[in-house]
Length: 71
Image 1 (tube, one colour):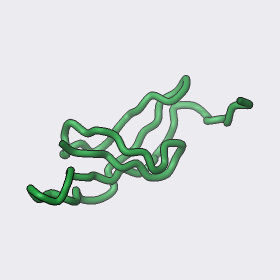
Image 2 (cartoon, helix red, strand yellow):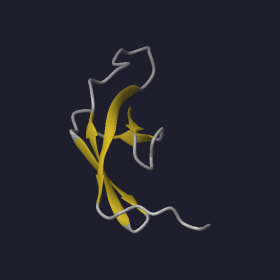
Image 3 (cartoon, rainbow, N blue to C red):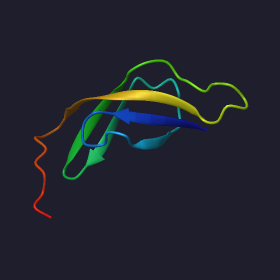
């Protein structure tokens, strides 16, 4: 199992399951738009006994302007 660790943007700090450790970018739904995160480094924890592999992704852009809601 691999994990995507997200940096920046509205999903900063989130960790998501990752099917393919070779992915270069992620496009994720967010409210009524989409967010794009790009790979930002090498995978860590790639050994058999050091926990799940982690791949860092950095926020690049959103499909629309993100406006905080009133609720």
